[in-house]
Length: 403
Ligand SMILES: Nc1ncnc2c1ncn2[C@@H]1O[C@H](COP(=O)(O)OP(=O)(O)OP(=O)(O)O)[C@@H](O)[C@H]1O
Ligand SMILES: [Mg+2]
Image 1 (cartoon, helix red, strand yellow):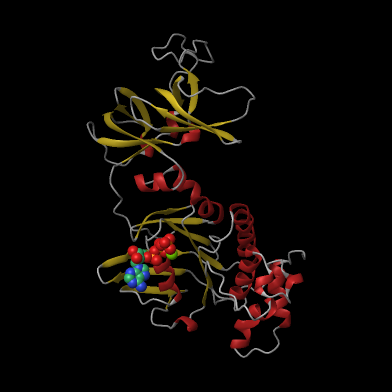
Image 2 (cartoon, helix red, strand yellow):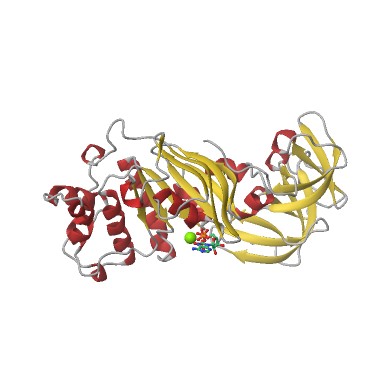
C-alpha cells in the first residue's frame, strides 16, 4: 500500500468548469409506472449527496437521467447553469460507478484505469494512471487482473477508472452493495476520503440508511418516486418531516395522540390517557386543540427505570403513581412491560409493550456491568420532552428543494 497522496497532486475540476448540478422538474414515466415524479433539487458543487430510499422508489432512474442514459419524460438537467438534457451520455462531464464493477476482465488494473484516457486518444497515460491508483491505494496492484483482486479492491479500481476523466459529477449506484458488512464500512471511509481529496461532486444512491448518513453532506430521502425530505443527516434524524422519513432513517417510536393544549413553547397531547409534552418548534405549524398527531421519540433517547423503584433520585418524586419514583419531574413518562431484550454488545435493545402502544423500542447503552431489566419486568420509560417530535399522519406534499 502506498501513502495517500497530497490533495495538490490530485486532479481537481478546472477553474470555471465547475458548478452545481440542478434537476428542474425531471420526471420519468414508463407506460403507467411513474418511476420518478417531478423532482426539483440542487446538488451543490463539491458536495457528497446521497439519494436514499427503498427498492423501486426511483433512485437508479434519477441517476440514469443525470447520466444521460435515460431520457426524462419532463424537466431538465443543468450542470453549472448549462442545460445538458439533450446531450448524449458520452458528451456529459459525468461518470458512473455501478454496483457490479463492470471491469474489463482481460485487462489488468492499469489498463482498466487507463481505458477512459486511451478512448479519448491520450497516449501518455502512465503518470495519470499512477496518480489515480495511488489515490485509491492500489499502486502495488497495477499489473493484476480483476479476478486476482478482492471485491473491495475491484470497487476501488472502478472508482479510479471513473475519476480519471475528471468528471464534474460522479454518480455511484449502490457501489458497496456487493461487499460484506465489514468491508462496506471500510470502503465507506475510503469513498469519503477520496471525495474529500478530489473535491468532485458525488451523487451516491443507496438503500442503506447508515451508509447514507455516514457519507453524505446532504441526504435526500425518496419514497415512491418523490423526495420526501432533504437535508444534512443529523437534521433529518433529529427533525424528520414525515412518518416515512422517521421510520426509514433510524428507528422511531411513533404514538398516535390528541392535542390537548397549544400556545407557548410547548404543546401537550394525550396518548392512551397519558399526558406528554412536545416542543412547539418540533411540531407542524397550525396545530389546534383536538388535532391528531403522531408523537415520536428515538429509541436511544429513552431511559428505563424499574416500576417498583421507589428510590429518590435527583428531583425524584418517591411514590409516583406509576412506581417510577426516581424519575425526575418534568420528563415525559410511560409505563410498559418488557417483552424482549436483545444484547447487542454496545447497547441492549428492548421491546416494550405499553398501554399507549405495543412494540416500543428502547436502546440502553451497556455502560455498567450490572444486568438490565429482564423480559416480563414492569418499567417506566422516561425522556426529556425536548427530544419529542410531532408529525401529521400523512406524507408531505413537498418534493425536495434547493440546498
Ligand atoms: N425500463 C423500465 N421499464 C419499465 N419500468 C421500469 C424501468 N426501469 C425502472 N422501472 C420501474 O421504475 C420504478 C423505479 O425503478 P428504479 O430502478 O429507479 O428503482 P430503484 O430505487 O433504483 O430500486 P432498487 O433499490 O431496487 O435498485 C420501479 O417500479 C421499476 O420497476
Ligand atoms: Mg436501483
